[in-house]
Image (tube, rainbow over all chains, first blue to last red; front, side):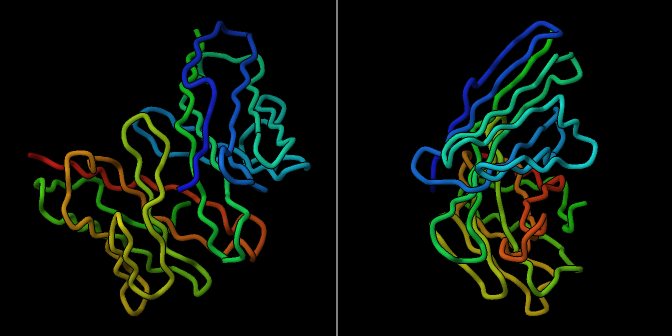
Length: 119
Length: 115
């Protein structure tokens, strides 16, 4: 399958600071990228969907001013957690959908995740 | 909300087949059945997907009932590395636009493969 990378894999920061997480599709172009959040022992929750060159669409209950998403190219999306607080500590996972092919079921590939701990 | 129901956990002996069931009784005609798995502290990994025919790839087989209300993921020879949470997801074609093509995760089945 296609490869999606995330950086950093782990970050610890102080409360009030901002953290940027990068998501890259390494061997394919992704028109659409997704950001998920996963708290311990829970399932993945979709936070937002971003299409290259346009504004992200946020799921209900996700603050767009707190979680800034930029999808500037077909291979890169960034999530910035602004003024992070301890309750933002979580596992953040990005996903990218391959645009190659015309099937209605383009597979969605996931990055390895970023563990954010806010002190 | 997730549109699937899966048992919370299952055990399987190493080397034996693991059969993971999934109920999706409200599946629509334009929705596919997807399976992903998540090994601890990693991102989900795509396994297989299907619409109505049974599918097989190098990782697993997917059996979908004729009425499409349920499916079974089969790992033919489970190994210890197959221990993971397995997610069954129904998803519309992305060509319907909007959020119908998004992958929405339920709670999945925690499969434990034991030696």
